[in-house]
Length: 165
Length: 165
DNA sequence: TATAGTAGTTGCATAATACAATCACTCTTG
DNA sequence: CAAGAGTGATTGTATTATGCAACTACTATA
Image (tube, rainbow over all chains, first blue to last red; front, side):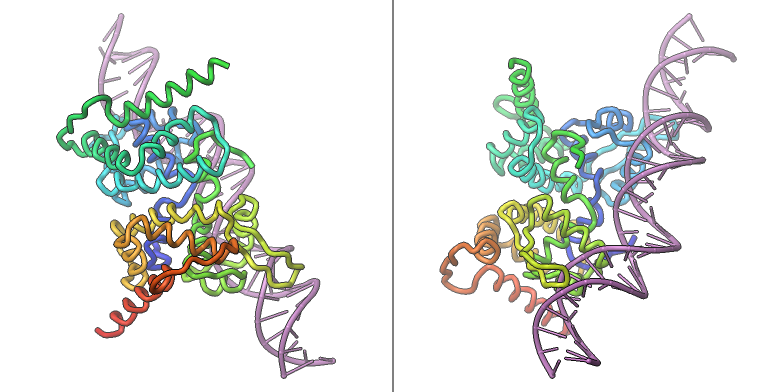
């Protein structure tokens, strides 16, 4: 549409600076939600269907997601592009700030805590795994569980903890 | 107001996820704009006065900025809190993404390019300097120009380049 | 006392967003 | 092939956000 300025920070804000786009990306990345219905019903913040439809169109237009070929009424699969995968550092930085400076529920904070503890190499590992899942890159062999498995394990452990008290 | 969820990413998006808040912070951080009028007239994107007033109130409420004591009609000075200084990695990540994946004007991209080239230690250096400027921390001696001077020099060099052609 | 400047506020028009209900299409099942 | 469920939206309506201009209240300077 309208670039308000040539500033790279503004360029990012124009695409991602709203109350839903980054949360949709979060669910695609960390929840591996690839279909409209999965994103709609899986959203803990409760996104409306028209807002989700609008954001998916915008994210595709911005080159962050691609939409698999599907006719109207058919299931369309959304995948991250490399541009979309590269938003992970932004989401990581936001999550870290939220973790440090805002309250929140322990089980949802546990993943961010793990990412923070693991450091920058873990972000690279996550991005590599996203290239496997979304771009069809050849899988890299891990010794032990992959990065998303470790995140899920951290979440599961925190949920367990919640139920104990 | 209303936390839509306990997710730390959502917590950050609720405070910073709009089209102006991060640009105001950018101008406070990189442009050292500390007063209402400086932020209003210095904004290259052209923020409206009521929007700026609203965002400043919200950023203060969120604990990101503090407002110096001033009556109505008096000049009020805004300063970053430690929470506000810690938004720098978010702004850096956004700028880096914008630099890599969106077009923009060369002179405005030059600062981000320098930050990217200098690496993570430079961000720490910038945050230390912000603590000096905004929190009254004792200045750290540099051998050579400080981080903001280097950014301004990069911008000046790029502007020069633009005028040559 | 006039003038300019600072930090907003108010009013109003337009645009964006949220929520609920509905639609068009496909796929499966009997 | 008709019924029913599932998918990916679209539509309608209400609320909220944004943009623009004018105005207020105060201060500092001349």
